[in-house]
Length: 197
Image 1 (tube, rainbow, N blue to C red):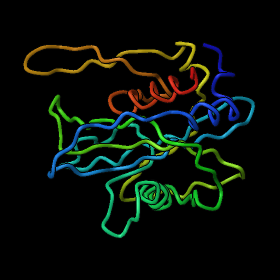
Image 2: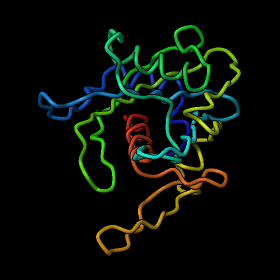
Image 3: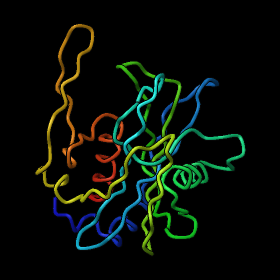
Image 4: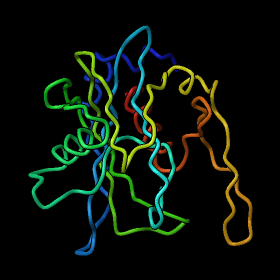
């Protein structure tokens, strides 16, 4: 698949008609939202953060999209993604970006265990330069990762993971010195699928 499939115009067209899949929920289900923030320079790039190492956080230290759990005051999940992105990296998406659409729901898991949490990824495109200002409590690092090498498989890698006495090699992408894997890897696959239309 050519990186042109992720052009703003193609993504806009495909997301406009996409009917996202919804995870079946129950009365214990909570929601979170993340922002896949794209910018177009010589090639499309996506904003990734490295979560702060924190006890009790099942995704501690992992690479992720900005985002978090929906709060009572959030009128909808788009608002959650916008609020969390501003809190974590200091970017006001309501002013500097445009919402292109949303991807399929993602069932949250941690340590191979299904959680009562559904994550809804939203795709935004920046229309003006932004300066990242990291939250010291939630985010240790933020970077712009080119999508072309991921899409072509150039940065494909695996991350070893031990579970129940078995070693698994989970798929991921090498981004600088970090590996993007797990939930964020799955969401990137959804983004690439949206580019395919």
